[in-house]
Image (cartoon, rainbow, N blue to C red; front, side):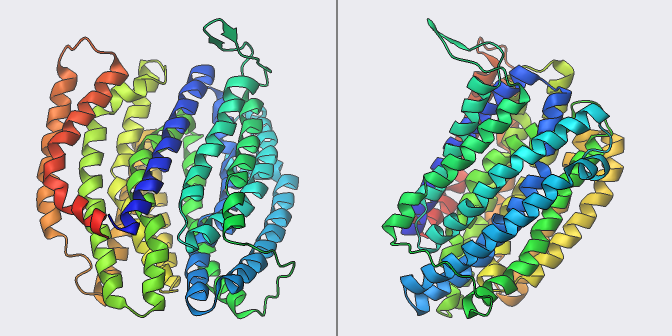
Amino acid sequence: MSRFARSTIIVAVFFGLEKVLGFVRQVIIARQFGLSPELDAFNAANNLPDLLFALISGGALAIAFIPVLSETLQKQDQQAAWDLFSRIANLVFLVTGVIALVLALLAGPIVQRVVTPGFSLEQQHLVTQIMRLDLIATLLFSLSGLVIAGLQANQHFLLPAMAPSMYDLGTLFGVIILAPETGYQIGPLTLPSFGMGVFGLVYGSIIGAFLFLAIQIPGLIRYKFRWTPTINLKNPGVRKVLVLMGPRILTVLFIQLVFIATDNIASRLLPGSVTALAYGWLFMQVPETLVGTAIGTVLLPTISEQVARQDMNAFRQSLNRAMRIILALTIPAAVLVMVGIRPLVGILGFDTAGTDLVVWVTRGFLVGLMGHSLIEVASRAFYAQQQALIPLGTSFLAMLAFFILAIGLGYALSAPGIALANGLAFTGEAALLWYLLNRRFKGVVEVRNTLIRAIPVALSGGLLVYALLRLALPISGIVLGVLAIGVGGILVLPFILPELRLLIKM
């Protein structure tokens, strides 16, 4: 098994563990708060802090930083790379702190006019309080995102993959211990409870953010990180990162504006729509993270090194293999989960109307599973070449498409229409990115054989899942749903073996 395959499996396993822990957390939250105004406020309050993290030290920095850091490692040495790392870390933390302070001061007007204009004044006040506390976690994440980029550039993926699970453990502490009025009963043991309500979730997030950073510190020690207390904007490496990061910040801004617009539109619909969209996104993100994010994360340092060596044939082959693997996995996954999602949603404990809403929202998002996964690789392909303008342009077009579709479909179909608009817009962006890659690197999208196998078997697997769910089997809902999707997956497996072998050999 290749190093790429081993790294991808490690990342997927720990991402999978994070999704399990995250799902457990969301189930407990759902049973504690339901589709309530308080939970809507908590979910909406995360948007701007998440935007700040994504712009400065999350998606923006990591993808802009890894190609430059990989080039430094290839052409110079590790100490030069860590010197560059320190300079960028100092700059990032300074900028993040200043912006966080400004957001905290202006949180009230921003919430009322931008984030949730459709909420009541009481809800808006709650959103404001939560948002200010969330910014503490954002400062911790600002350092964590950079550490992840540094370790991944050194082809170390274990600790960065473990970090999200550490965050979930912190948030679970908030959900189970800090939030409830009465302690959970585990056999004869009654757990302590602090009765903080929704604020318990916030403080749990701050604890989780600290653990997210702490788990990665041993990696810095292993790779002999030495901090340099300077920035120096004239440093060639710093300037390269900033040149790439500028367009990337705008790209991530467009992506995050989609989520802000999602809550803005949903806040004007039925109560619970914001939370239903949050849960639907969570269900779609499980297969997207295990496939698209895992492959894209591990692939970026590899293709960045290939570009640095000017080995463009290997670069083209890497992209083609990644695309074939993603198509073979996401097309069947989207169909199987679409058909089998209802029993899984049932575990949230919502009433029939709430369950129906989350089911259809999830199906709308799953339309974009393939597109979101393909974007994970295609956008990184351009950043590996240190070309940031093309992903910027396609992201802007996707945002415009989403705005138009979400307004029309949202008011016609309610929250599921917003989810469907997301799926259609980002699938369109993926198609455009891969078309542009294929224009430059002929053969990148030679995937006909994969599609011929994946599409019919996905539909057959979906029919099998539907039939199993219609049987009156004496099995509880969640177990039946997992079993039905699992049986459908077994049917699909023999038809996608060529792509699975590609993954092992990459």
